[in-house]
Image (cartoon, rainbow, N blue to C red; front, side, top):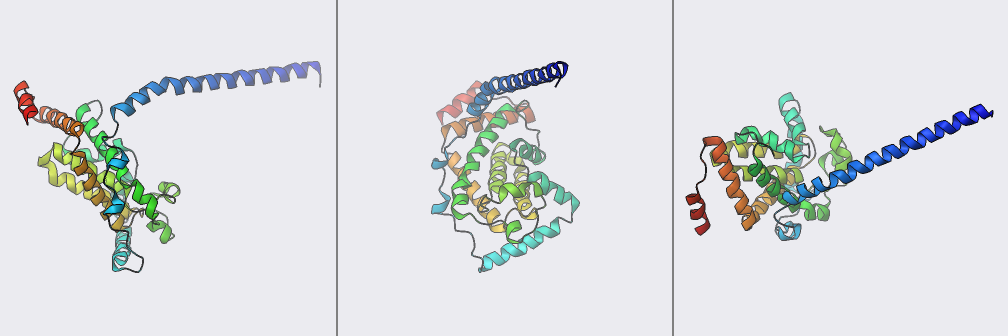
Length: 275
């Protein structure tokens, strides 16, 4: 190799090293600059209860149906029903959106039924109430999922899901009870408390959300039914938390003001504090 070629090669190597150092520094800055914000968000929206403080599903929720039982036959029939629903392009699209495991997305899907757009910026108290409440309820099914490790419909049937992007992650995640349903039903119950006039519409959307898990092939019907029971128990448990009740009052006050222009007076606050 000539001296000129060696110098050229050395220059390329040095440039490559500088680029790598720059990228490493850039990545480090992003990581550490972002940490305080994430820590604050976690603290602000922390769950009301730890998993161990929630109802233990293994102590009261029935085990998933045996494969030789009539209940499992019903699961099979509902799985077949779900496949027919995929033929409806509108319903199939809803089921796919319901499969997205992102709470902001789910809240947005429910906003129409709730009767108001919900976001961290526009409805901060309602948003905080829902996020903290739902993330608490999300924890309710984890222990039973690990214990039963029930196989999901798409695995048993050896077929692809409608929401195929979920398959890899769900193969090692127990099917019973349905985690999506716990999230969707608890969200409906919490929204209903803020806007009771929209109860029927909100609950209908909550039922649809659970049914979406059957339609995409992620869950058996008995998984969904168990998820609704687990969510209901978790929401009842939330009402024993003074912190939860305080945030509920803030969410209700914000809703009344935004919907009807009614602002809570100091007299109202004093009356509530005496109860």
